[in-house]
Image (cartoon, rainbow, N blue to C red; front, side, top):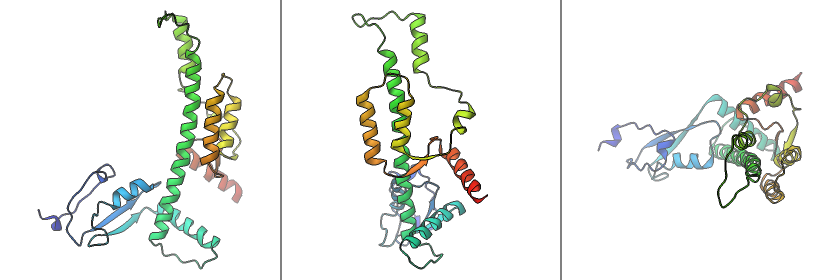
Length: 230
């Protein structure tokens, strides 16, 4: 009942669906984590139900996030030929959140496209089962063949992860090449639908063709930057 004398901590999970009746004059400290997207950002900020009418926000970030926002701000100022200043305002933060949201969408397209290849490989394996009135005798040989075709590799050699040339390509180019390298009989209909979606929504943004996870991607980007400096 004495909310005005309390400090509340809400983690990301509890910013969804939480509706506390904070009194007027409350101020929230919103932390800006690496890769913060629009949905999570809005969910956190809107815990202040009276935002602009008695509630207010401040934003806090790590040094890494601060540098990301600053770098993006400088890039925009140069493009617009505006005078540079070190002060970060709300527009700069929103622009950074929007950039993260775009990146998250592109990453989602990549994972979705990769799953289509995995699905088609498994679907192809089941096509060779000789069904008879919905019954099939699953012999040891058949089960071994199914497992071989459907299982995902648990051990990946470093040469396959890091050995490929560090080339920037669009998502469409990356997955078009991957389709060409797959030896299974893939569905042309699914292939065309996936590539069309990548062409429509993938844009011209490029990423390293190895398609690694975020940590490996950042390591290789740093390595490329060091090579250019040398």
